[in-house]
Length: 540
Image (cartoon, rainbow, N blue to C red):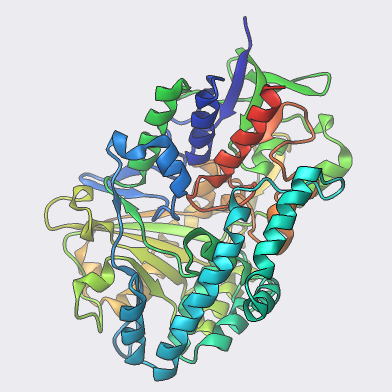
């Protein structure tokens, strides 16, 4: 059989983005997805009759280059951008709202702190300035630090020149902020405790870290590079996140890609140390010049590749790659919109809703995870997508999606079970099913303090544990970012130093998922960047 040009393992959004660019370049990739639906965690699923929700709350946002290149609006894709980015609820008063409009935000903050209102415009200007300088980083292939090429040195020089152009004040801030604890960063700018927590939460979103952990300011810099604002927007897709991946898939197939669902991959075929294709669980072999894995690094190297073919040093490093999931997700089907204390306008609930009144609250929530338990008072990032998209629920009803931290993948009371087939015959797997309802109650109960009539409106509840994120959606360790977004696992160190250019130690095997630069979120940048490197190699 004539080998294909490229096979992509996994039809998550990054894999589909890579498929489009490879197809546009004339290489007609084959995408193999083990589930019956495409999208990975970016799907829209019915969790109760008539009620649909997405695993990923919002888009991240998707790279504007990808939106334009794929012409996604041709496929019916419609983004919804509420005027409210986030509302931080407060049991003792009105919420603090961050709007798309900076002036409106300043007026809102003045109700809580005149000083914070005045500082906000400088805060936004600072991160917008830093974000512009760092933006080229997002679509740059990280350099080979051992032997950088002339092109890599030139690109780094251009980036350095942009950073020099920040001016002394913001240049100094950038150098300080990278390794800084986000709690310290927030305290430098603002005095209101809830506002500090709102800023700090973006540094620990999806991370096994608390606001006092070193390096937790780095995600704010990445967010600023994406959108000019360190506080992430609430960007929804009409019809849910599945509509986004459906549109990307249509663009990819229109360009010449082929997508197969219910098409699991048992492993990567190797010959003379090179990847030559994949093998299906039924023994079918499909050959290709390039194999691109959209799975996370641990899944790729510890399950899809025979560990005996890897250099022992590399194997040890990938085994120690940190991907300790801390996120649980709860979807609620509601008969009506709950009444939230202090919220006088429904618009304030249309973006993201933050539950975490102060920095110490966030740190205490992390304390539980450090010692192997889920928090009794979790930090929550909530959306009610039906406020802007009524198609997700029956008339008058609503869907509430709750991202809750901290719920560690390795929960106290784990059991040893046998997994087969696997590169490690025995693995420690948390006993999550026995505590699923307890976790759901632990999330809903404190939320009811903010919305007293919430429980009486619940029609159905879906609880997604970190173990579910691994077993159903293929996220090793239940980590939504395919690995920690810490300084030692970013840019030229993601996933490992020496292997950050989307290529792996196995020739013709590549990575294109969130475990590569620039990391997690629904930006599509890892897929875009990886496809560029694969195309270079295929054209040689």
